[in-house]
Image 1 (spheres, rainbow, N blue to C red):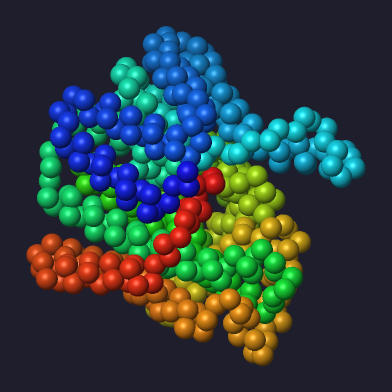
Image 2 (cartoon, rainbow, N blue to C red):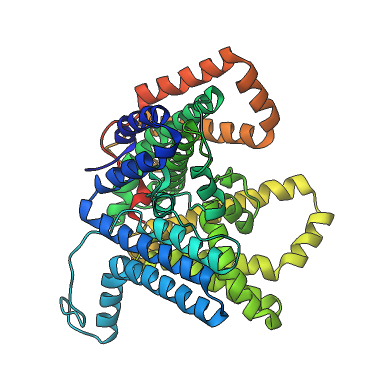
Amino acid sequence: MLFNSLSFLIFFPVVTILFFLVPHRYRWALLLTASCFFYMSFRPIYILILAVMITVDYFTAIEIEKSETHQRKKIFLLASIVINLGMLAFFKYYDFLNDFISGFFSLDQGENLLPVFSFLLPIGLSFHTFQSMSYTLEVYGGNQKAEKHFGIFSLYVMFYPQLVAGPIERPGHLLPQFRQQHPFDYVKVSSGLRRMLWGLFKKMVIADRLAVYVDPVFDQPHLYGGFPVLWAGLFYTFQIYCDFSGYCDIAIGAARVMGFELTENFRSPFFSKSVSEFWKRWHISLTSWLFDYVYKPVSFLKRSWGKWGAVYAVMITFFLCGLWHGAKWTFVAWGILNGIALSIEIITDRFRRKKLKTQNSKFLGISSALLTFTFVCLAFIVARANSIPEAFGMLESLFNLSFTNMIGLPIITKFSFVMNFVFIFLLMGAEWFFLNVETKLNSVFVSRVPVRYAVNTFLLLLILLFGIFEQQAFIYFQF
């Protein structure tokens, strides 16, 4: 079953109605059952992977908490990490590693040093692996008590709104909410549904429409060059943002309707004035996870290196960030490019602070935002390309822009092409409003019912008139 935004809209109301009908003490069981059904709708057998992960982390966390010696704690933590990362590595990176080793030993094409397995990547494996690992790491660090209720811990790992594409929740934020009573709250229900509507608009009207242009260019880049590649790179940046943040909006909204609050995963990232600021606004739950569990320990070990220790930690962190996104060299290259950009910012930090004091801050802010956005678009071209040579070819074609073919694709009409820009400008305008007029925005939406209904109706009409209603899976489901 291909679970898309429309499928979720059928599944969600049924679970929500039952949630408010069932007594509080049974709600965890209802949500866990719904989460199992949700995950098994993709590929039933892979729920066994989640079962193993949940069982291992449940018992290792209890043993970590009970252990009286630091050495014993480390043994159980190591067991949890090895099993979790072992399953992730096998299912997600086995073929990648097999191809790399076979190429390294110069085997003929089609020959492999290791046995070849044919299986689909379990959906959302990276997300629930990191979420489960954060639990044992927090218990090991003394920041979290081990959860004794197996069902509630299972629900923490499998909570269906954010199970397959995040946000990656920390145990201290989500686990206590499963023990709290959540009565029907009109304000939360209304707010949650509005958030879901906004997510559907971003997914169905922007992301899926942009895919019509983006996919052909990246699938066959040798047929296009110049402006078609420029538009594809720009559109893909907005496509992946609207696709992923749209899912997160739907997940956050669905959880809020039932009274749960999930972590914000995006905060208007395209207004960032530096790459470091971008990563504080983009995929926040992953960035904070990598910062806490990778960057901080590595930089602490290399603290004697001063600024270069931070550079070393950043490069390690973003190499792993790229690899986390997928078993492709293009993802690794994308991670390294971001690591290099962040390293340059670390090295030039004092110089940039000095410039900020002496230069026109408004002009510098705008130019910095444009430069950051340009880098983000170019880096995403590398990530989306089918191979490193194709990525370099597409980047090279940007230096050969030709006005003879501004669009370059016969499958998309000029009207659709222009409408893509209209929706992008609408998105950016709304995000600027959220970013700069948040207090006013809340006042308008909460106190002025006609305004709220008018905006909701407008978004619903845009979805009905311009939305793509074909089966379009979310991009981050593959991660």
